[in-house]
Amino acid sequence: MLIKKPSDIPYSEVTPKPLYMNRRKFLAAAAAAGVGLAGAALWEMSQPSTPVLAATKYDNLVKSPFDTTEKITSMNDVTHYNNYYEFGTDKSDPAKNAQNFKTSPWQVAVEGEVKKKRVFQLEEIIKLAPPEERIYRHRCVEGWSIVVPWIGFPLSVLIKQFELTPKAKYVAFETLYDPKQMPGQHGSLFGGAGLDWPYVEGLRMDEAMHPLAILCFGMYGESLPNQDGAPIRMVIPWKYGFKSIKSIVKIRFVEKEPPTTWNKQAPNEYGFYSNVNPTVDHPRWSQATERRLGEFFKRKTLMFNGYAGQVASLYNGMDLRKNY
Ligand SMILES: Nc1nc2c(c(=O)[nH]1)N[C@H]1C(S)=C(S)[C@@H](COP(=O)(O)O)O[C@H]1N2
Ligand SMILES: [Mo]
Image (cartoon, rainbow, N blue to C red):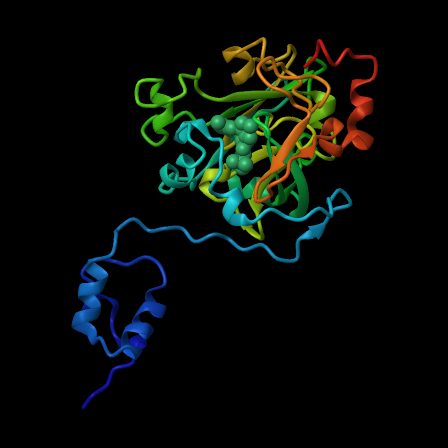
């Protein structure tokens, strides 16, 4: 009997439809299981034709001096309890509805008050600096919190690539607008939030340059899952979660305070600054305590989410009741 090793078989002989990922491994497994090549071909045909992109692993991550030593929240909780209204308003929606979101190729346009605008491919941004691991607390305005080992580097690394004009006082961010892929962007009819799309956010220039504010493209040692904002998002740990805009396609330097999605939606509830502040309540609920996902007892919320030592000076002389 003639036994062909999988590697000797021409691709065309057994591939009615190309299988994009892990073909070798699959053939080896089929051979080991004694399925035979006809069976193997049938099995291949029965597989979904959409190639699922495997997560990129990151190792040799640079350690950061900003890490919290608090217990890291399980990746399962962080990837199944999300706010990402483009993919639905239930916390469980993004994990289901963002599965086939296409994050490659991906471009980020940097424009506005700069001498020279530029469009980056995602890969060009990631190569600007060695990736760091940043274990941060994250506090959602709704009262839950998580501790996540994010991967990224300071937003300042990107900003420093540009020669800004003297009018560059704020940075405005924009999420992808693509209702075909993001069902929540159809408006309130189909269970969407009825927000004004695309999702937009902003920072004052000194906030944007602060070393705690990162451009993030991974978590838990790998590239970002879609529901957490793949392929690139902001993480701003001293502000409520909604400032940390996901799936960014545009970064614009501007002169005036830019509009932000939740401020437009409910200006008396969500201000531009949105610094975590246990002493200033949301009009409809207290902000004094939070519940860490995976824990039973509530804990006290800390001023600036525990990052006061690093960021309080940014707001010297400002009335934080007015500038909420
Ligand atoms: N584009 C976009 N970005 C977004 C949101 C959103 O709905 N759309 N939700 C925000 C809110 S309210 C929070 S708490 C965080 C949640 O991030 P996580 O799902 O990775 O925990 O994303 C923020 N970024
Ligand atoms: Mo949030």
